[in-house]
Image (cartoon, rainbow, N blue to C red; front, side, top):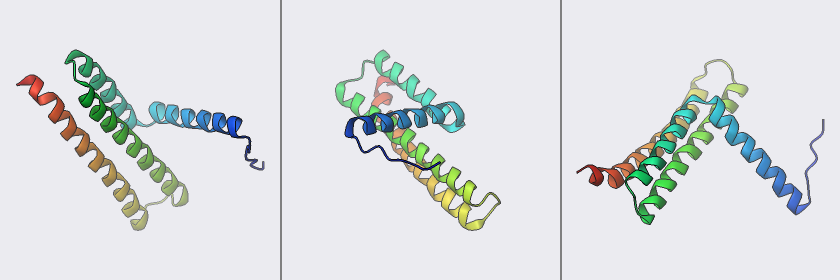
Length: 124
């Protein structure tokens, strides 16, 4: 089957949106790390309403949630491509996967710091 690019602006954007939505749905329904992070995101949204965080706190919380879930999605894509290219253990593939996981770690640490800055004062 040959790929045929949709050159029409509007229908091409709608197809891109459909693929993006399907990809997000696949991430949320098949990847355990995304399931955990998505659940935490929902809990943080409820916490935001419960603690009545302000507009700036909502912005930072939203960015943190989006950052972690986005980077985790990219990490998953890197892992899937690496496993497809080289299904058996390989030191170089392992190195690449570790770097991608490290990016998730940095995003998660940033999100945790933002969460502490927002919510710790609410408990003190």
